[in-house]
Length: 290
Length: 329
Image 1 (cartoon, each protein chain N blue to C red):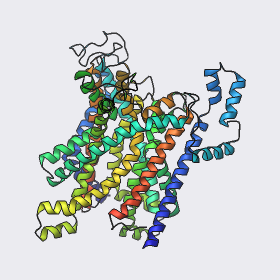
Image 2 (tube, rainbow over the protein chains, first blue to last red; image 1 turned 90 degrees about the vertical axis):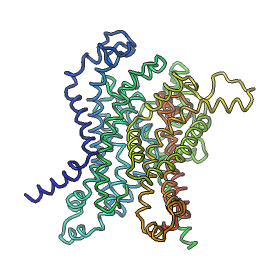
Image 3 (cartoon, chains in turn purple, blue; image 1 turned 180 degrees about the vertical axis):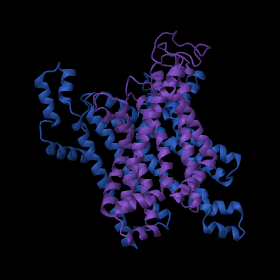
Image 4 (cartoon, rainbow over the protein chains, first blue to last red; image 1 turned 45 degrees about the horizontal axis):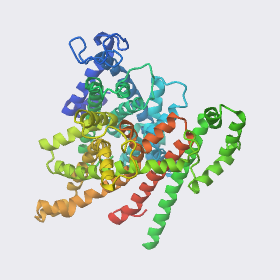
């Protein structure tokens, strides 16, 4: 027990505590998470209240100005943090769950099972994923935050499965897998109790980077008009701004803040993922290819 | 050896056809799972919902037949290149709509892909050569940041800067409205270029980042290999090593990347085309989804699937000739 604890601490030390990039990434995420949690306290106004002069430029009363409907933009950005983070994180987790499972099975089992799974991945990759998501969304009568998460998760795991599969294939050739086989462990045990912990850094790296792409997908879906109409996400704000000709009104204050928020939060997840991959590949002589 | 090449070729071709066939089958099933009778829909729009007309349309579309029969009909028509008739712009054929849209998408996608690859090769190589320098850090850092930015936000920023504030380029469409046929060709080309500028620029910006990071890591990977160490030990100059060994080998993986991204880019330009109202495949798909125009959606998906699978196959077939280390298995 004690040994495991110290092993866990060594991992933590190597991947996070002595890793500046990861620390910066986590710092940014913590700030956004606090904003999301305390949104009702932090937001100066009700994000949906229509009570101000439309198109007002940033001022002391409205730090980020007012949109074309007369809503306070800062309050919308603050509340939007919640929606974008929730969708990004949960869709990212769902994507990872499917991606890791399919990748492990296809990589370890190989043969017919692996062939069929990878064929399925190839087929889905040959269709335009964003358009496919919209078509699937049009099956549903109405969109909620949950259906957005499920649609993104169900259609985004393809690249992740490929990456985990190739990683698993390399791992399968290592000695500890043979040892586990000799001990009489079954495939499921070997996949999840032996291989998975060994590729854990790659899995985590993929997972955090998938969160970034889920947030981007949510933004694109909102931009194309798919999503819960009652919720204000950053993507939705950009979409509404574009539809209401914010560009022609020169209303940069309506577009720049949500856009930069998506990019900054996404960047912090990318930073963490990438620093994990660097550390992991340095461990293995720089031989990790994704 | 020749025998092996042939069997490799056949296996890859068969595999690509299988993928394509499954994709087209999903494509066939999608609108039928969605429900709603398109014949009723068109009849309601054109003939005030006359049930006789709806029935006639149903027969014309083959919707009165059983599902397996419809499937065989669908595959047969596809082989003949017949993608059906659009519901929303009835009775224009889907192929004629797609043929009009495809050149615009190809124009912006091809131009931007080639330019972004060229820039990515240069910047990626420089960053790899100066690994750990401030130049390298800036290139990699900026790349990650851009990779986390929504495509359409980049498009909006460029539109705001070059279209609105500077007013250098037209803000939407591929050609000026009401362009008459007797414009001299050089003016026409100028106009097309001016309209394509902002969409191309946004596609370059968003795709450059990922490619640059990839090229950088390809070069770094190669520098860690034995034959580079050997070349260094032989005392070859840095420039010689780079041009004779490293660059050539780093270009190989990015060649595959180039082929694959050309296939996916056709479907990937959707939000960019939306921002600039650029009349390519992406905008066509979005309008089709909006109008529940199933044959048009299916047609676009089929074309995109053919592009992706075709480019994959081409990359698979060409790659062994470029890199003899790849065994033909």
